[in-house]
Image 1 (cartoon, rainbow, N blue to C red):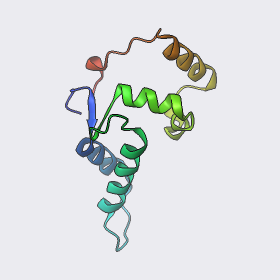
Image 2 (image 1 turned 180 degrees about the horizontal axis):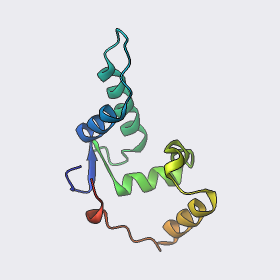
Image 3 (image 1 turned 90 degrees about the vertical axis):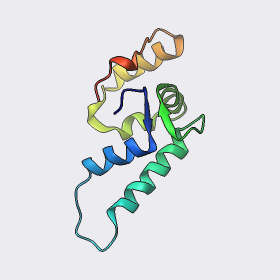
Length: 102
């Protein structure tokens, strides 16, 4: 969100908060979002700096293919995902996160 190449705990919280459907329950919705953020960081933050880098993401996806599927239909189909992962492992993928739009 701030174009530093990382997704911080606070940025992740705000992105999730802005994308969640508001429920009319007695539970504090922010608590559920905080739980999701903690779960994501526990699973994907390999260097334990409380933010996600592209490196963290790539390591996580290599270790757990289901993470790609968790992102839903916004991702390419299996054929393209397998090619991407193969290219990623061989070092044929050059990702410039500075060009990413927030």
